[in-house]
Image (cartoon, rainbow, N blue to C red; front, side, top):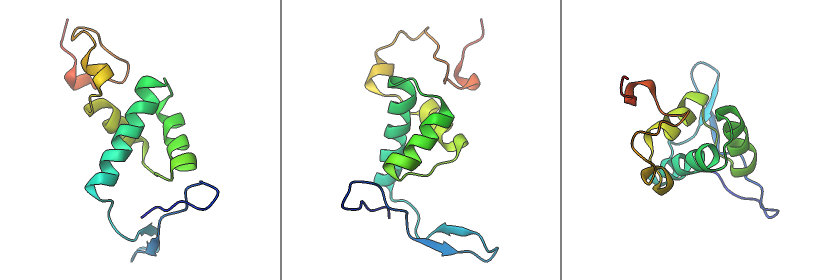
Amino acid sequence: MTTRTNDGHADAPTLRTGRDGRRYRASAPSPAERARARRLAHKLVCELGLSIRAAQALMAAEHGVRRSRGAVWEDVAYYECPACANRNADTRTPHEPMAARTPG
């Protein structure tokens, strides 16, 4: 679980060492934490226009949410915010997955 310090910065999540010697999060994120990360990634990329890498860095530095670029891309591609829902269905956004695009 990620906590906030007194100055408002995100604290690192509790980590454990795996059998392979790498450090992993002590517990899996809850569904609420995953939903928050999904909404945050989508907001940073879709509404603020950041790149996937910039959103990933900002999520880790400011919000204490560490996600891979692939996870951030999936969050952006498969989550539809109200702003995206109001767009014309024929309008393709840069972060729309190739499988979702219609040929032609």
